[in-house]
Length: 260
Image 1 (cartoon, rainbow, N blue to C red):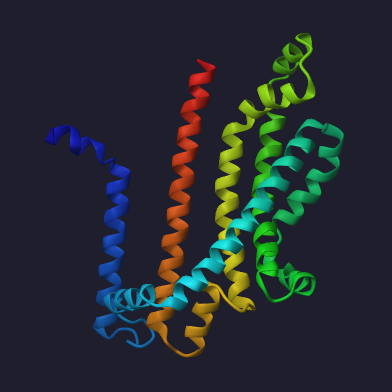
Image 2: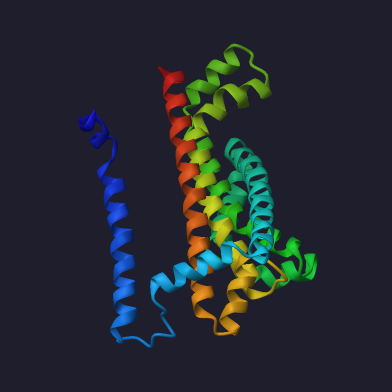
């Protein structure tokens, strides 16, 4: 039993865990060594204590709810538009050749520069953060789907036509299994940049959210609380990324089962 349990812990997870522990002790050691101004980089365990205080406060959960709503709505919009447009451009080669260079050019542009436009269109409330989050997450998704659709073996389409498959069945039975890996890779990347775009929007100009809390603590020079919010954001992003990884692995096994 012990032997089987030991093998369940992969070397990757072990190294990741040890890296986090080493980072924590390095942070604590540097902060207490006097090499850096203590108030500028407070000890990690001071920050950890502040995180506990934040988690027990009612305000934190209200701001977390705002951030989760903005991230969720932004990602949903990015996924719906990105998957639909990516599949259309991947299937329709002419339109793909027209719009792919434009999409690639805009994808390399920092999305935060569009935030003033989002504020003018949607105001200071959640709408502008949803918009900048959706805009950030859209590009990785549409590019991944477009690439996956382009890589489809033409033989599969010929077989579908020979069986007189309807457009719906062609999309569902041919394109969807072919782009499954690209779909979840794009969604995983898209969710990550949606989170980043949303928090950047909250930090720039907002009335609520974890980013709003972080910049408020910074303005008050309450650095332990600011670092606490940053750690919570990192933990939230890591949790979401891990969940997407699990979903991707599950669907990859499902796809492998279908193909065999």
